[in-house]
Length: 169
Figure 1 (tube, rainbow, N blue to C red):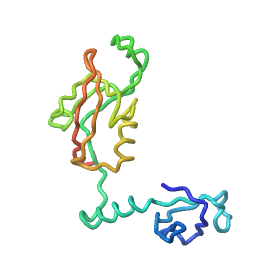
Figure 2: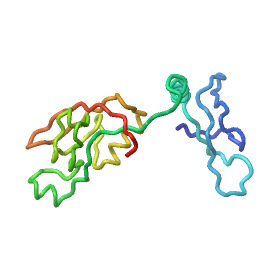
Figure 3: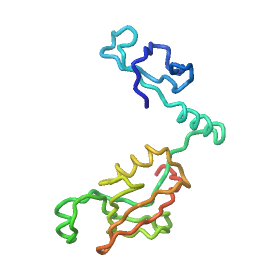
């Protein structure tokens, strides 16, 4: 999102946000209003960057929908000091894998129960929510790959995991 101080009034959503050269740089999306009774813009507007809008439009043209329903084939829980002490691990960050789904891309990538995922695409993670944030932030879809940094048996490993399509279950 782009935050702008350009006036975005009710009804302007979907319109272009232009720079001083008249180039479209974003699509106006919404305004922040301090109350339900505010008339017009109060100076805080948000817009979708034009490159992201173009990518979304291309995806709609190519596939007829936006599909971000992906699965990685694991369940994990946040590491904590008790788990770290019990497992004799010298750190408390990361997400410990508690289940690897059979026939999943995680299983194919070699991920095992008790692996500790410490980063995804170079971003530190501590939970499944953090992993989902990386997927969402990068607009990843089924077939895209994640680079996982895993701690297993006292060693760090790099694993490439391909996202699979989730059936929503």
